[in-house]
Structures are given as C-alpha cells and as structure tokens.
Image 1 (cartoon, helix red, strand yellow):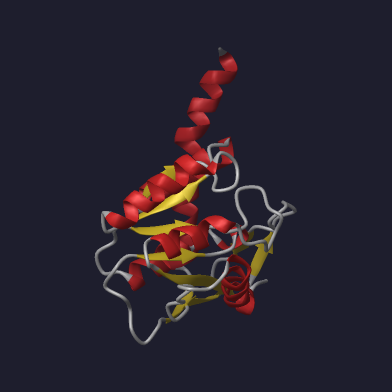
Image 2 (tube, rainbow, N blue to C red):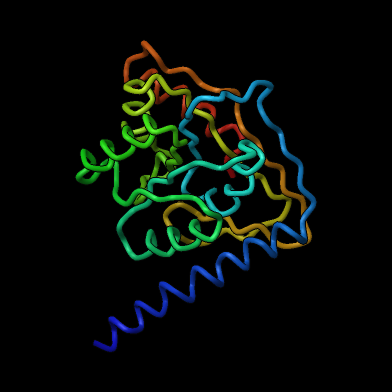
Length: 207
C-alpha cells in the first residue's frame, strides 16, 4: 500500500518538476531553430532518439503553430513519468511499444494519423538498443502515406546520464540548436531501406 502511494505521488510530483526544469533550461538558453523549407500541412511522423527526447516539445511548437500530436510512450514507470511531462506541454500520448505487443499501439497510431494528428516516436525506445530503428515508424508511414520528419536538439553544454540511451540533459545558460529535417518519404521502399534512410538522418546530430 505504501509503495503504491509513493508511486502515485511520484507520478504527480516528478512530471511537474521535470516540466519546470525543461522550461528553466529553455528560458535560460539561446535558441536557434532550423526548420524545413516546406512544412507539410498533412499529418507527419516526427522521430527522435530516445536520449534526445527532453526538449523536443519546443521544436514541435515551432514546427506547428497549432499543436495536434500524440506521442508513443512506453507503459513502464519511466514512460508514465514522461507522459506526465508531455501533458504539461498539451500533447497527447499513446501508451505501449511498437516492438512489445505492438499491434495495439500501431492501430492507435494509424487511427491518430487518420484523425489528423502528428505522431511522435522514439524509434529506439523504450529500451533500446540505442540508435536502432524499429519497424513501427516505417509501418505507420507507409500505411498512411505519411512523411517522417526527424527532430534533433543539439545543446552546446549538457549532462549525459549513464542510462542505456545516454539520455541528454542540456545545461542552463547554453545554446540550443533545434533541427527538423526535410520530410522523408519512405513510400515504395522495403523495410531495411526505409529504416536505413531514417537512421541516417537521425544520426546527423547524434551526441
């Protein structure tokens, strides 16, 4: 019972503290946004590495003046914490993994794309291996004829946690360079070709 209460408190307190930390880092940093020349009006899939997730809501707000997105988040405790933080930024979530019992998650993602939502995904999440690209991003893109846009946040100064994804936390009072790639079309490509192109773009600014 005590453990359950502490867990519930953590799921309330940690997202609040996390959201405040993200805002503090953002407000105390110089920001530069590098956006594609043409931003699609139709729904897209935006992808970033799991370790590069922290500051991406701010890039999405530059990409879309009116945010309408759902982010695929794992059902594990850390995923629930991330989901809580994401809700502070007025983005929706879909819980589950595209690699573990992924059919349900893919169906929800495909429905969200059909309903006009952008979909956010970390192709190497929720547990790695680091810098691997799961099939889910390609399946959703090809079934809904959606483009993939790769997101990066490249901080001038940062901490890197000793987790499997080497999670990056930018230091305050630095410079944040945000990058959104030109839309990537994987239509007509086989699975390995499509994953290779997505990974190539994801690796351009990987830390």
